[in-house]
Length: 119
Image 1 (cartoon, rainbow, N blue to C red):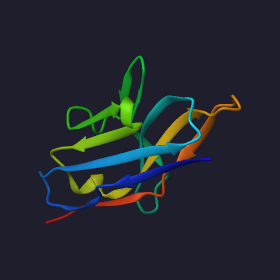
Image 2 (image 1 turned 30 degrees about the vertical axis):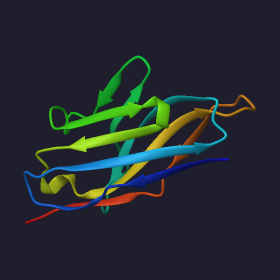
Image 3 (image 1 turned 45 degrees about the vertical axis):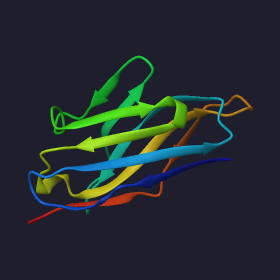
Image 4 (image 1 turned 135 degrees about the horizontal axis):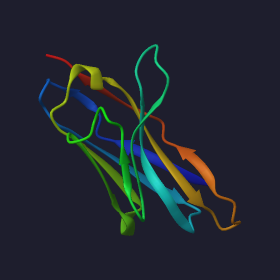
């Protein structure tokens, strides 16, 4: 089994910063990609940022403000969020595409962490 454990959410003021972390553990042969999605109340879940061995992709709404990075030795992905806006308020979910020992790539989700941007 694979687990994704997130940390780092909370309350920030507009213009402030937060950093999210997500560590993967368990039966992992290879992490193909790791990243972040978010879901605001009444809205569908949307991609925020995702990174693989070859590139990183960001939602247009966060480009230039958020940075997604990975520590491969720790199987951990980070999301540095700067210049936060109230519209960034959402539950943020870690996501990973992982190849386990039995060879079938599976899609895994973290439990979600709340980010609230408010003055």
